Image (cartoon, rainbow, N blue to C red; front, side, top):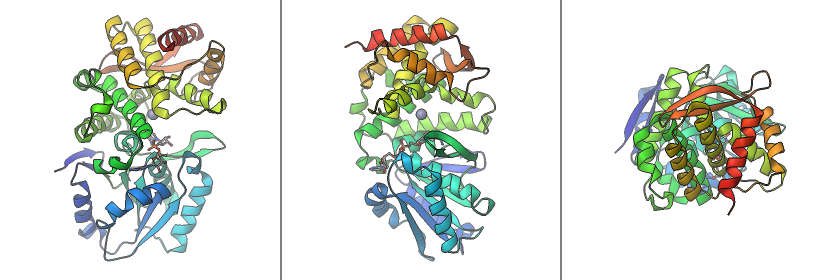
Length: 360
Ligand SMILES: NC(=O)c1ccc[n+]([C@@H]2O[C@H](COP(=O)([O-])OP(=O)(O)OC[C@H]3O[C@@H](n4cnc5c(N)ncnc54)[C@H](O)[C@@H]3O)[C@@H](O)[C@H]2O)c1
Ligand SMILES: [Zn+2]
């Protein structure tokens, strides 16, 4: 069983038979006589590569390139290593790079493939929940530079994306949390029915993420299809991320990093408050969002003295214009507005609201 979604000129195949479809693709005419390269990290190589192996092309050898695990390896150093690897093994413009891993691997592999010989084909096989519903979908590739996240990158679409939820069996709970925060975000932006289904349920009770993944990646795909280069409405996907990135930076600076999921959950809480103030989001809905987030995530606690640092981080956000803090906010569940410029006083009020919620 599998589902197929068309996004721009490629397909996203998701479901328990996704890897069987992949195997069929490799034996089709389009992929005959091409050389294959596989990029993954050490941890994914241990957990997921044995499952993928039997679905890989058999006619030609697949050259494996492994990098260490972790965000710090989404770097120029790794890119250089992979470009050299491709070159050394004779990759040409018809070669295909298979990216097997979380968002680090799909962002990095997409970037390397889209720049090697001015661009070769690549296929994403996400193995984290975050990768399946977000990072592998939409054609944004990136590496970090000197601790600045995603500062160098390209827009490049894969040949196809294969989402096999079975990979999640070995994924750590913290990583499931991270992807789940993005699923809640997608529901808030694009699908009231999905939100209504999720708001009353406990993440820990979800045994099988397959249907949720299909819904969530459909929401993202529909948004990307309308604005592939983020000139306008794709910015709605930033809901929760203006505050979320500031939380992530603050805790990194404190030397006690929090997960992206917790940071986004904190961001969604602050931004749902602002949605009420700026866009008249109904108080009952803001309350519903708060309850759902507070019961699902362990929201990071902040002290009054942290507020100023958080505001300083937000003032440096790359979405800002003329020094004004830029958020995506909700008007209703399923309806978000981007480019909402928020005065510092309101940002401070939102942090105050957050602190009151998180005082245990
Ligand atoms: N391009 C985009 O649109 C987009 C969107 C969202 C996030 N991202 C990027 O994605 C990255 C985060 O992605 P992530 O959360 O997937 O992190 P990740 O790629 O670092 O993976 C998280 C951890 O899980 C391990 N792992 C992966 N799959 C596993 C499995 N099935 N079993 C066991 N362990 C497994 C990895 O080795 C790693 O240690 C960030 O760099 C972020 O900027 C990009
Ligand atoms: Zn995110």
